[in-house]
Structure formats: structure tokens, C-alpha cells
Image (cartoon, rainbow, N blue to C red; front, side, top):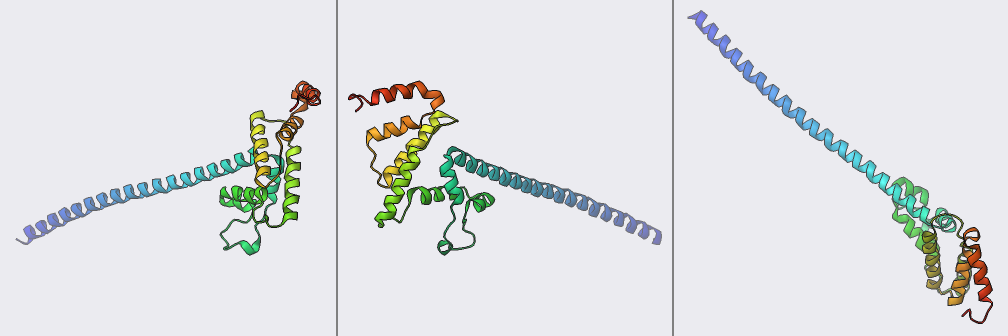
Length: 203
């Protein structure tokens, strides 16, 4: 009987070990699957963040590229007044905007540097800004690049001038436009225009 009992215990022990081992194998497979899912999710999140960062940088680059050199320089130099910054997380300049991917900062900087908010009560300052914007308009030469894109920039500058109260007659708009055309491309057209503009039919 002792031998039979020992054999039964050994058999039971082996059966329990096999059950335990199968349970471990199942648990390990389950844990491995969960780890792979978690790793895949992390990889996708990292990829998404990288792609989002690339997209933001691309947007910022395209916006700046579409600007005139003068406008781009004004935005690059724009720095928020420290007294107006509410917290450390707030973007203060273009360099920080690039680091943080804060592409909306460009629009904020453009508003502050081009629309001149908050100075309408000072007539002297406003007059100076009007003269400055009119001067920018008169010197917006089309040198290289897409002509239609340049026209859009020219029209935007005219709108900026009118927004801050610059008085531009239709004749002045035409003169500014023609004077800023690329001489090497529109030389003949400009010569014909200048010839016609001296006649009484110009208006």
C-alpha cells in the first residue's frame, strides 16, 4: 500500500506541475501579447508626435516663406513685452515658437507687427505707422518667385495700409503696382504704361 500511495502522490504531483506549467505558459503568452500591444501603442504615439512636429514645423516654414522679407524680419524680431507675459509657458519669440511648435505665434506676431493694435489714440504714432506701411507698399518689388503669390502679398499690404487708415487712391494703387513689377520681366509693359500714364486718358 505504501508503494501505491507514493506512486499516486507522484502522479498527482506531476499532474499538478503540468497544470501549473501550462498556466505559466498561458500567462507568459498573455503578458507577452500585452507587452507587444503596449509597445506598439507607444511606437505609434511617438511616430504620431514626430509627424505632428514635422507638420507643425512645415506649416511654420511655409507661412514664413510666403511672407515678404520685410514681414519675415519684423516677425523674427518681435518679442513679447515681459510685463504682458502671464506665465512661463507662454511663447515670447519666434525661436521659442519653433522649439515648442507654437505656429499660432506667427499670427499673433503678425497682428502685433503689422496691424499696430492699441496705438489708435496717438495721432503722431499712427501717422508714422501709416507712412511706414505706405513706404513698405511702395518698395514691394517682385524680384523672384511665383508672380501670383507676390500679387497676394501686395494686396495684403494694401489691405494693411487701408486698415490703419492710409488713404490710397485707385491711381496710387496702380502706380505702386506697376512700379514694383519686375523690370526684367515686365520692362516693355512698364514702359508702355509710363508712356500712357502721362496722357489725359490715364484716369
